[in-house]
Structure formats: C-alpha cells, structure tokens
Image (cartoon, rainbow, N blue to C red; front, side, top):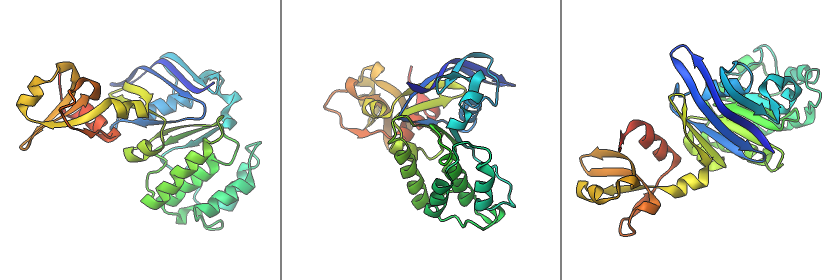
Amino acid sequence: MNALELSHVGKRLGAFELKDISLTLPDGCIMGLIGENGAGKSTTIKTVLGLMRIDSGEIRVLGKPVAELDAVKEQIGVVMDECCFHEVLTATDVSAVLKNIYRAWDAAQFTALCQKFALPARQKIKEYSRGMKMKLSIAVALSHGARLLILDEATSGLDPVVRDEVLDTFLDFIQDEGHSVLISSHIISDLEKICDYITFIHKGKILMSEPKDELLERYGILKCTEAELAALDAAAVQAVRRNRFGVEALVLRDRVPRAFTLDRASMEDIMLFSIKEEKVS
C-alpha cells in the first residue's frame, strides 16, 4: 500500500501555480521534498493536509481521497515550521489536553520523548527556544498512533547534535513497515542521510521524484576543460558552471567514458546545478 499518492495535482495561487504534481510515497519509506524557497514544497504539503483545495488532479492519503481526510486524520502526525501550542501551556498541560482529543494518545510515549529531547515538563512553552518548540511538536506527532508523519521544516532551529537525534527518531519510526514520513527541509544533507525517495520541486513543477540511491548513482560531477566538455556526448551533460579554474558539469555517469574521473554528486549538487547553473540544451 502507498501512504501517499498525488496524481496530476494542480493549484493556482495568484501568480504561482503547482503544475501537474505527481508523486508516490510507499509504506515504510521516507520521502524528502527539496527545492528553493517558493518552489511549492509547503503548498504541496498544505494540499495533502486538505488545507488548500486543489484545482485539478487527485490526492489519496492512507488510501483515502483527500476529501475524506477526516477518516484518517488521527493517523497523521503533522509538524509545521511553527509551534501551534499556546505559549502559556507546559508540556504536561499539552499531554492533558491532547488525551481528550486523540483516542490513541500515548502519554507514556510523549513523556519518554520529552525526556529524550530534554524538554522540561513544567516549563511554559513561551520560555522554550525555537528548537525546543520544534522538538515538542515532534514529540506530539509521534505520540498519537500516527502511521504517516508530515513534516515541514521540522528540523529548523535545531543544533546539529539534536538534529541527528531527531533524524534517528524518524528512522526508528519507519522500522514499522506501516509507517511513512514526508519531510521538507532546507538542510538537504539531512534528507540525503535518511530518505528513501527524493522529490525535487522547482517553480511549481516536479523535476524529479524517485529513489534517492538511483539519483545518486545516476549523476556525477566532472571537472574538465572546455575542449573535454565539447568532446562529450551532449546527452551526457545535464548542466554546466564555469569558473576561472575551468568547467564543472553535472553528468550522467553511464554516458561518460571511463577515462574521465567523476566526483560524487550530492543531492545538494544535483539541486543547485539543476536550478541555478547554465542549462545545456
């Protein structure tokens, strides 16, 4: 079963438009959404959560059409880029409130996560740092029996050590093959570390949505001269950037002669070459 399916989704917001968005997140997997600010990542997430009505296409969440999201909403854990809890509450208060909202609320799980994340149970949320507020939101999302986590910049504001701990928590979550995660982040190295699938959105369009390992195996970085670049099969060269030291090109590994030495292309390399650098026709 797939946790999430978007098929040819379109949504216009003024001058911006999501165009023909299609992606599939299988059960037991983590998908990362990447793209620059304004690319459409948050808009895509809002359509999945039913916060924006789509103009065209179809969305299914945990097997249900997005119009029937109420049937599965308790099985979705959501963390947006801002904490949604009133600042006069404490973590203890949050648990007391949510046990009356979520039928599957697990107070023991929530307490354990608060301890793991070093969140003072009786300190008011207004006294928390931004990172602590994000950790509180993550603890809540993991404490009501969710099968699908949807996270929009959930690691924002966290220091590297805590980010690593949170990422490990997401990996633990998907050890249950019925669990899945959709996460957007500007910290692409985090997504490269934990994601099974990468979806790259640019100007409202999906440029790629496929298994991360296949993407990393497909591309390489070639540092060469103009003459060496000109000698390559044009279909091998995806994008080029030039500097005073020569040429760097994003290339398809299987189309470049073995005589050339290729550097590894990270997901960040692939994204930056694709959206910022000179395109090769």
